[in-house]
Image (tube, rainbow, N blue to C red; front, side, top):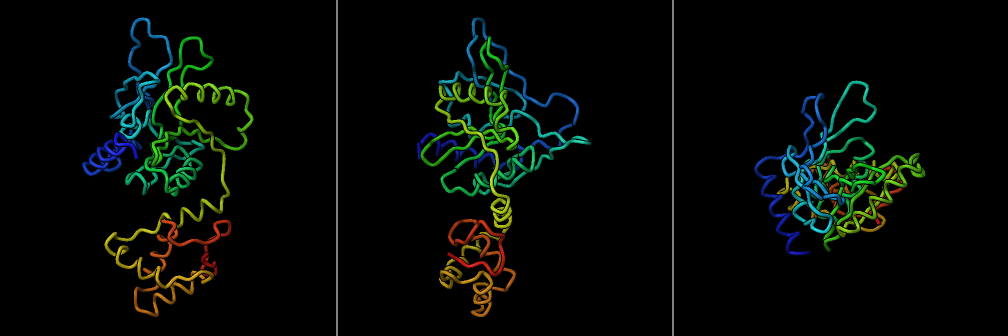
Length: 281
């Protein structure tokens, strides 16, 4: 992992210890500006630029070629996650194990993507509404804010826009994403558009992500449960064996198994709903 990325992640952990949830501004008034204001352009500055914020209030600008890991890791969302009567999408705050803090999602559809990203072991950071591209004069679009940015263990930076499958061939969206991809390439940031994944997959992941257990208890029980696990054994059989050997109660055993599935230390068929009859792989 690049040293600059390691340092940025350490700074983030220190921020989170001082106050969790600061990047999810769900309690702001529903009236007023939703987006962080842009800093004024300098005289003669006409090229595209990227605007970040470190506090959710004031923005600062970077040239496309000057973006750093710290900008992406320590950023706050560029927009508030508003909730209004009659609003079709319902913003949520998702607790990410990767980040160790809440990540804002503007809809349940975005939350499903966040679950998938959180599950991927090569992802070391997830940021929501991470920056805004302030396009150069003369561009078809004024600005664009990706839904997420991901950073991987080898230092890759990936901006992601989450869209409904019905928008896949929308001509305006296609043109917008083409421009975004071209501009972000100058910052060595890849750009992807995510449309959907099998519902059963994200429902299983939501189940496993919800397996909360104190770290000291999990660290003591997980190795003992793994020693009992066998390929082709059902989830129910493993749970019963854990109980029979007096390692844990039935309820605790199931939480540990779900947590091990989330951490990909146990495996099963993710294309079918989770049940006690599923067999381990």
